[in-house]
Image (cartoon, rainbow, N blue to C red; front, top):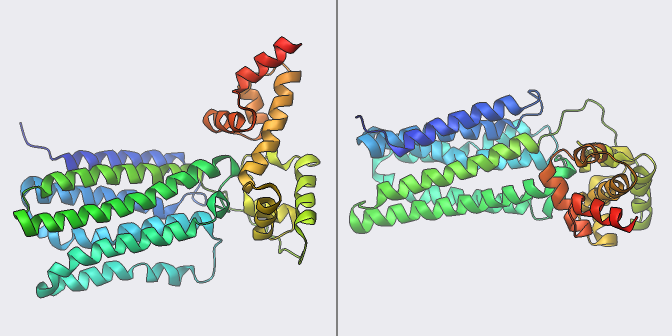
Length: 341
């Protein structure tokens, strides 16, 4: 029976994951292209790893580090797509993110500097992990283009992805030390573990690509309200929530809310945080939960129907937010109100 390296299995799983995520996207505009590219690249990297450690093909050592240097920039660009609006400098920014891979390629061409790759790669991973954590420093509100329903889980996933990059950098350092101390006796096992870690990272990235995308909108509104105090800002948002019931929009996010209120997104985020001590997604979801409580009490609609009516799309998010606000599940809430009646 032919030997099949674990890395080949990982590569196949990543290809399946890529197809799954690609099919889950609503359209080309809403797909997170950097994360999709990351899955394909990682599948290719896993294949190269199988050739190197499964069949002893040493030539891949000149290709794999270049691909590895592209992984952190792709993670960063995927995160930035959820955080920032498209700008005129986007092409320049993407070009700058290719510099690490170019640097690694140049180093590999200079045989006397090959040992520097073992230092450069962990530095690249650590640097981009720090940059991602910096982007996410304001919490779920940093995800201005992510629907409020999924802001909290997406935020946790991205922070975990950054920490996984740090873990991957640590693994690279351990492999380097293993070659220095034991001539690479434990390196194959370490690399196999690294592939499994990469699969976890990419699974998270895929979830972000599916859940954290915003349909592209043609209409844009330039904010024209300046120097509005927190009280006035909060009042304007409450009008949207209470009168127009904007929270029912399942794709509502901070950017979209800012366009509806004609108030800068940062101003809304700051006002809600200072006035309520909550982030915007928690604030909006509390309006959703409040209406869900009313519908569960006053109507015979199923929990799923109520969930969809108030703006949630998944039971996991609905149950989590409902319990956060009421300390009960939706079913427990309905039962408790039925007993009182």
